[in-house]
Image 1 (tube, rainbow, N blue to C red):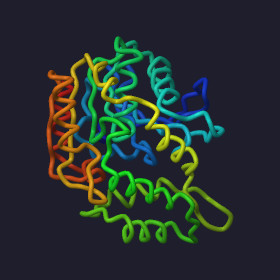
Image 2 (cartoon, rainbow, N blue to C red):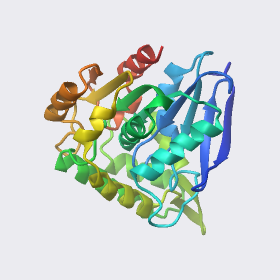
Image 3 (spheres, rainbow, N blue to C red):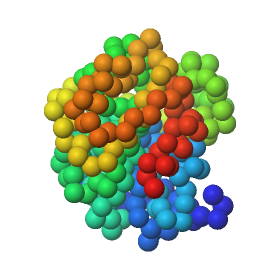
Length: 281
């Protein structure tokens, strides 16, 4: 990646300020990377290592309320609002059409954009996400409990990383996760606290139920890839067998790849990254 330009910058959207990271030339075709519920732009670091190419401009976003982006008032979040943000970000990046790679909630945002602005999407990648009202209860509970970390205050950054290594159940734990969780932290008094807003995440978690995902699937008319995890979290799946089969029926042209990862470690999966890379060419 050293041969490619990396740049962190802010986008001033109608809804608020959003942090972005670009890898590659701003003149190359755009691939937007959209993270999950309480994640941030560094969720894609391992995948970026595979996708980086001279013919791509990779831009990862911190959605509002996450990472280094602005925390806006309660009531300003939700799927539709994030869809508008992503589309406005693409417009500011001077891309009439772009590819979108979305993980978890980011996949739901991708499905929303496929319905609201299908002419903008060239290709759509859904990483272990297909809709919010159809996730196994155990998986939802695991994700919801993970939001408790956003209220933690620690003296040392290493204390936070160690606590998450112990409590998260992420395995294998790689240096990626050290960097990932360190990025969440910002100064707080004499210590450190996550900069991501728990209330923003809760609003989006609850808002997933406001949509009929089986109807939204019909809007996926562009080439699409679903990367599905075969290992559960919290005893359940974000994309169950039945959801996989139903979306395959509704969107018969969708490509599917299943990987031996769970909802978190899929972001470290070389098999997933290679499948995405091949699909986007």
